[in-house]
Image (cartoon, rainbow, N blue to C red; front, side, top):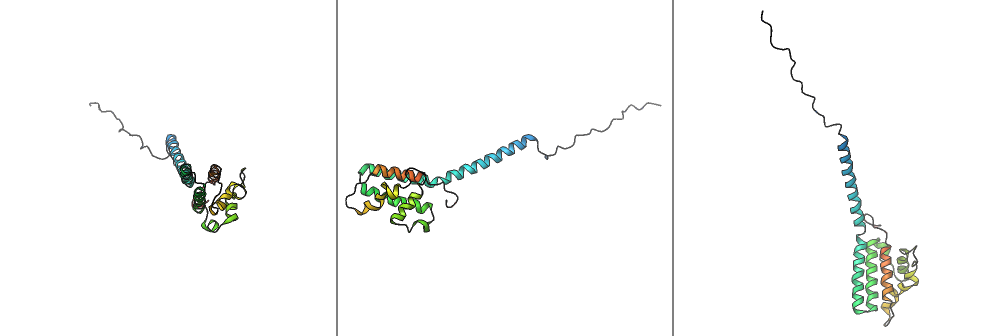
Length: 166
């Protein structure tokens, strides 16, 4: 009887399909890095937006300073700074807290922002008083450089604006 020449081989077995879960450690690292970058981007954007009012106010102050350097009109400088301070405060603080303030109350409100500095009473007791007195005097001596530096310090001391209001 002839011998069977075919071998008794088993069929080819393919490996099991590779599952996508659980992820390999490299994918976990990539996911964590992407999440970190997303959170960092959101944080930086919010921080940038929080300082927007300060940047706009400082650019407006620089424009006022240029105008003062050209014409050296102290009376006009005081008017511009008074309007500028009022606009910045109304933009930054709730309108009901700021809009009705006049006279010494207004200057004390401005001083609140300077608390903790060497110029903590500069508006109500120092050079800032010219904001109240100079517009109503025909000839007044205004120390423009000192008043401009006080206003710059005041803006720099504004707390960073949060969502909506401070």
